[in-house]
Length: 293
Image 1 (cartoon, helix red, strand yellow):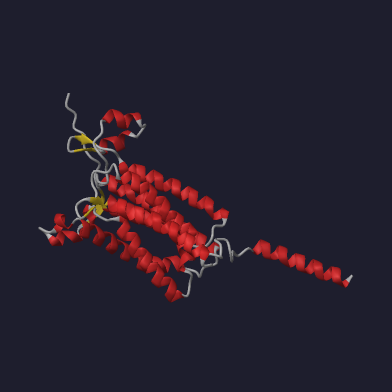
Image 2 (tube, rainbow, N blue to C red):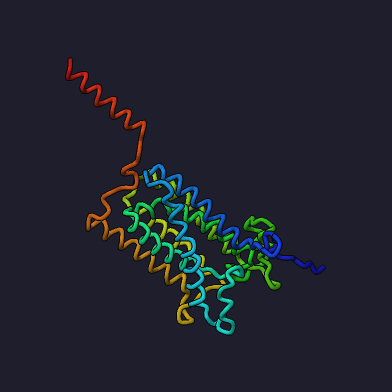
């Protein structure tokens, strides 16, 4: 018996002439939850009020432009016949590496203008960025993109993947690996690890670099089984090349900053601690009373 599997509707809702797609909604949801996480930590780290709210006003538009520009550059043949379609971001086609490059550049400029440490801001934002990426990948799922090589339904069922995911991985008569899911889970695991590493008190800057390395390691492997990807010179997978460069550069930057004494401050330095201050005050007053005796 032939059974037709209908894909999930990529449109979240319509309000008059306005059509809201799950793709954009989930990306914005990821950005919002990431902001809440970063803003909470920023307060604990003593950053000025609304630092991340102000940063996002510039970083989000820059990231969207960077993500789209990056994608269009490496897949120009897809837009050459109709250049105006390069602006149809609701149809998908945002490259995370382009978004990250644009966001980092924006953050560097923002930090310099505000007289803040870029590395401190980046360390605080690292888990939030990864959380946003994890949620954003579900937008790719709703668009039936970012999938892997062909696979049988029985293989997907053996992996204990929910049926609604398996059904949406049925594209043009074929089942595919849900690589969006693999990356989302990898990113969520990374969020948990980064939140734990906050307690370890890493050197300033190394939280963000750890994020970059972690994401790149996962992307390097996952990209190997993706069937939709961007290419450099039509041969090399762009994401894999960028991932390898990021891993090597990240390790090199850590070593360089340590050798040059540029990473002496640690993540928990300058942490406001009212309870601790009271304790210190009590110790000092205790010493003074002892001297009077």
